[in-house]
Image (cartoon, rainbow, N blue to C red; front, side):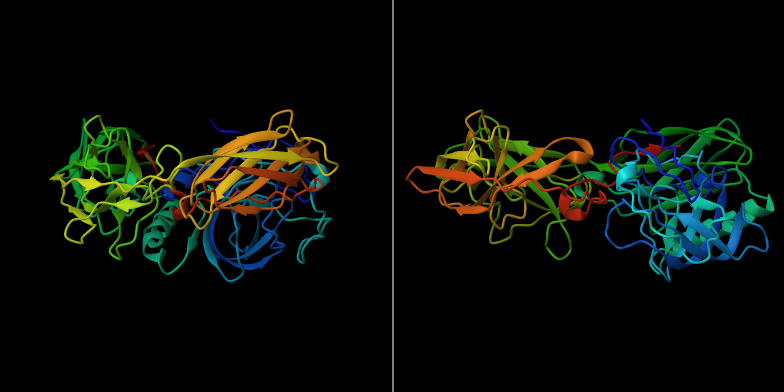
Length: 492
């Protein structure tokens, strides 16, 4: 569902709206944005008044020196002003000296891949002075180019893929573009294999045209100058199938369509898990991670499978890759799975290589002894000694890269309990937000380090005075956050 942002791109605009997260769909080709954008050009950033705070509570202007214009800009224009998404969570970061292919929009046009926006309340907007070059009595048009607008950085690693886009835009400007179907085929997204999949055959079939193409080194394919009509596209590769199957597109006489595919593998890895006594270990969560050429996990995402009553586990739909299997290798130990990280290994080798479509049966492996679960009592007080109700109390495993957070919420007496593991280091903290909206303040406690043993532990936390905290712009997720950046096939 798209949330429409009403924001006038003039110098004097301020508006209010609820906070929503910015979610970008995968970027399409230039032809997907050229018709809806009001201005399209290649330019170099020569000025920005972004204050570097990382917040969207500021009005920002970016000044571009135009290198080549394709739409909406006068032939003699040499510069363009852009708003990077002021007051929104889709705020794009532009830096002086960078070159960009820009798709700019007016106030009434929502970029097609922008799913949600955030607008800062009026009273928190920083009233910055107008930057040099803007006459307040005769302001220039300021185009809107936030994240998800189709705008893309031209860098050495991306220039080879942007060059064909620029050539298309030159044809678009000249009015000689022909119908086009294009897209990208990527490896299985479930394990972070979002890189392009080369050598995949992509077929296209319609009433008046049938053909095929092979993906290039980056997984890209295209069919140019085909008759308008409805077509079915299908990527074909032995031991792989596309998530969602074949996709239908409609090709207009002067437009384009694109389809991005994710390929699911058909490999299987299965095995059996024993406890320390050599008996089958039922109902234990087993993890599988894909590892790179350096032997380190590629942490876009891990998969889990629960062992059955005989301790057997199975992972399906795997691509050709290297994997590691174990217990708590992608999650911290907790009360339900209280074991230290334990990886499967055989003859000192813990990496499993799986060929395309292969079915691997692994030798069983054993769990070590699990840690005892200790209940820790926590009481939280306000600065004046009153019991603090509704406080979130977090206990996080110290040094654990996979999280390992146990949490509870205090009752009317300011009390809660946490089930923690004996012999494990935790940092414990209380946190509560006081008030709502723009008046919300954060009250937290000091962080306490504990290592539960056999003796009972009772913690007393005292909150600090509530403090107003400046909210930061929600940034794109990174590899370490276990999220697939493009989880499903996209068809346009």
